Image 1 (tube, rainbow, N blue to C red):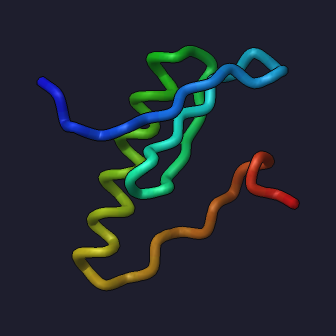
Image 2: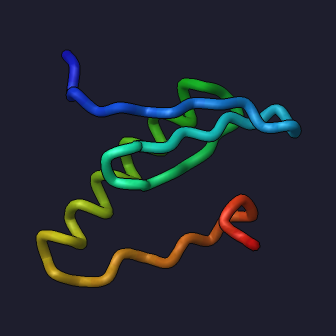
Length: 67
């Protein structure tokens, strides 16, 4: 079943996988491609739930978001 989402998936230098949902800008990571995608699904769901509830989404807490 396709969700129609565009996802960017890449492998970082440390071997972990990074997944970004292009429509929402939500990102996640995992030690495998599958885990990164599963984590991304969870993160998108939580973000969408926060938006529906009109509460703030949690601030990113991951090294790839640091300047």
